[in-house]
Length: 228
Ligand SMILES: Nc1ncnc2c1ncn2[C@@H]1O[C@H](COP(=O)(O)OP(=O)(O)OP(=O)(O)O)[C@@H](O)[C@H]1O
Image (tube, rainbow, N blue to C red; front, side, top):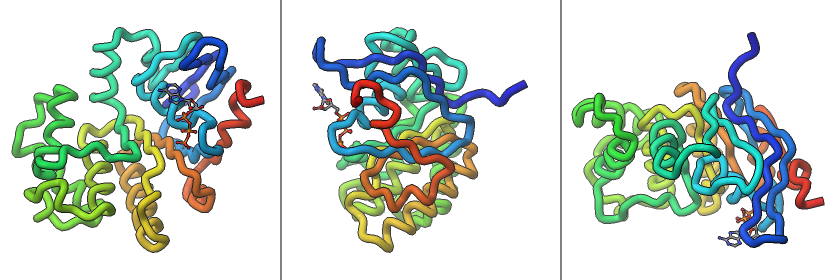
């Protein structure tokens, strides 16, 4: 029996405005635990594809299956709940709530995923483990999110995305605010953490030097018939 796929895309078509196709992808697959670097010039549709894969947008035609769930056919509330439970999304702006503490930001992700079996103490223990893996001091848990450095906020956004042990991590341009040393430290920690959580990873960046960290490097324009 072949291994299950993390992502399966078939005959996908998407446009924000009729007559102006942004994405046309015949067939694309990502294997379970595969780590994929996705790149392409500004405006080629990378963020749009990530939004489709995480169920924030739905295709005009075709299908997207995440780990055997046909996410593109779910109702909006089911898509939101699927994303909260199974997909870790880290966007360029991190989306931490600035006036909440780090632990309360992380607890929010548990609340949205309805992971009620995880009690408050359990969540705090799990969050502490993630912070240690991400090489962050534990006293950050009780600091306000807006008191952290950009690099620390980035790692907290990763911890929040990992708290529900997602099958799939979707990460959009996370290193744009980091210098070279901080970028390579961040990449090491991200890849190691994703590996130890047995998640698959889709990582978007303009910085092709980062592609060496990944199992597969995919140019979106090569995949996207709408770009040809
Ligand atoms: N909400 C929207 N409404 C209409 N058009 C949009 C919207 N978001 C993006 N677009 C258009 O869709 C195309 C793809 O945009 P997208 O943001 O996916 O590209 P990108 O490759 O992620 O770009 P960047 O690298 O600059 O973030 C662009 O032409 C953009 O102008």
